[in-house]
Length: 320
Image 1: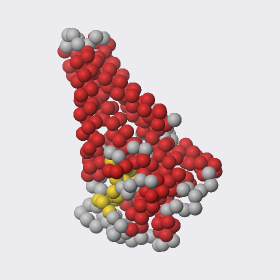
Image 2: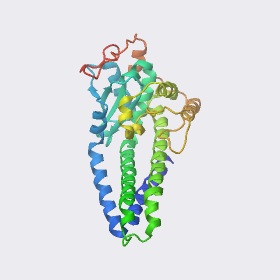
Image 3: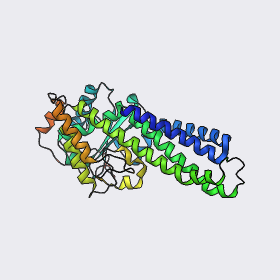
Image 4: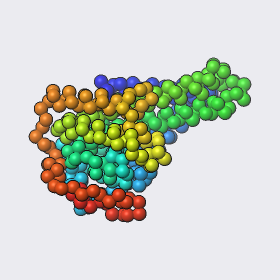
């Protein structure tokens, strides 16, 4: 159901992009818009993972320098039937995580140092299972294409604003009305579709992530903590890169709990309620993530707060 809805929204987004090109420049404008969209999607397909990891100065870790955290990802990947992704940590006091990569064979998952401080190992497993669900559902590619199309539609709207009034509208079959639609209506519609696709992907990843980790309540508990922290702990890198907000398990810029048409994420309480219902309907599996159970029995030390900004070594302690 969610897959069909996402496909329909993407089709609408593509048609909207082509339509804006047609309103601005007729058939030639539509063709140019298609070529631009294809080029931008191709670039995003190959480069989005490197760009976002670089923006957050994420550092790759392995089993030698972070055995507990790496082991959780390895066990979860095995449960999901996925190849082992590259694993990253980035320095931020705000607990959060994201996934990126064009396909499961070229995926990466990243968690903040704040996530490892704030959550129990079981909650960390729930969060990272959610991110692996995004990888399995290829949501990272879907959202990359969606963001690219939305940005391109806004760009065409700006072109209409800059040049629409100075034309004789020879190529625009709808004249001034077409220019107004391209300037105002189309970018707004594109934003609404982008947000709707993002919310749909989050619900799907919640459910699949709960299946991967074996206990929906792990993720439910983590969501409450992360949303609360996002309201009072700033994420400076996210503020500098607002276009990446949809990638995180909770919007790092607001942590808002109220759902609306312009939100990148669903209502947190609704997500938690859905996971709680899922826990009641299905008996939790018997701890598929052995690394999580091992880690919870160990005393946890807090990772150094300065890691990642001038300190090239990942945090030490039970997670390393």
